[in-house]
Each structure stands twice: as structure tokens, then as C-alpha cells.
Length: 62
Image 1: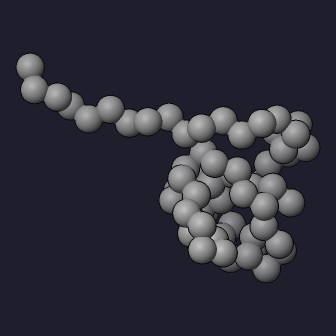
Image 2 (image 1 turned 90 degrees about the vertical axis):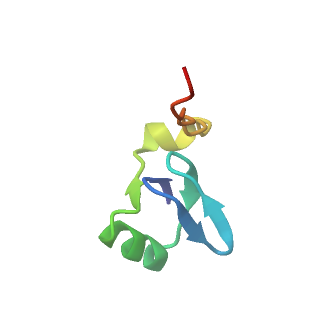
Image 3 (image 1 turned 180 degrees about the horizontal axis):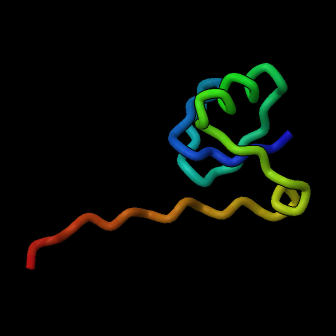
């Protein structure tokens, strides 16, 4: 099943940033759902192409 990362998540050696989509088996999903690192995607979301996470903009000098 597909999940959306809510925070940075390392799974199977790959780092996923918040907002990225990852595929998880039930065991991995249970662990990451319990610590609120991922959220399940509904069927409509899972079929859409993954959207890149927004980049944060730091405060610059004025």
C-alpha cells in the first residue's frame, strides 16, 4: 500500500522527505503509522503522480 511521509523517513536504505510517497508492507507501515511518520493514502491519491515536497525558504538578509 502507498503512504505519504509526514516527516523525513529512512526505509530500506532510502531517505524520503515529508510529502513524498513510499510503498510499505504491513509490518513497516504499522511501525511508521504508530510513530506518525507516515499517513495512508486513499485510492485516488495513490494513483496520482507524487508531488514534490515544498521547499522551505529561510529568512535572508535585508
